Length: 121
Image (cartoon, helix red, strand yellow):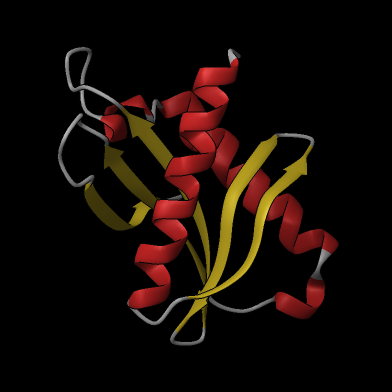
């Protein structure tokens, strides 16, 4: 992955974390690595543990950011969440997987969309 894409991804994750924190989410972790991939953000909201996938793009020319969540990616997210919960049984309880989509267009504020419970196992 190019440095430019990595920088965009980090920027998007920070935007998502700020957006969610303003809406009452407690950010518990970032960039959690496991055998099935990375969990971008881990948060708690109203007693529910929330695994969050952040997708950021600079243009909708090739589709909206959330459209990058393919069925294969959904399975990786589910497996990553389950793997994390097995490693951290103290966090057992209600959980879900959300997606935050960020479109960063030049000269304007980022367009942020939050899809709760976007991925279901």
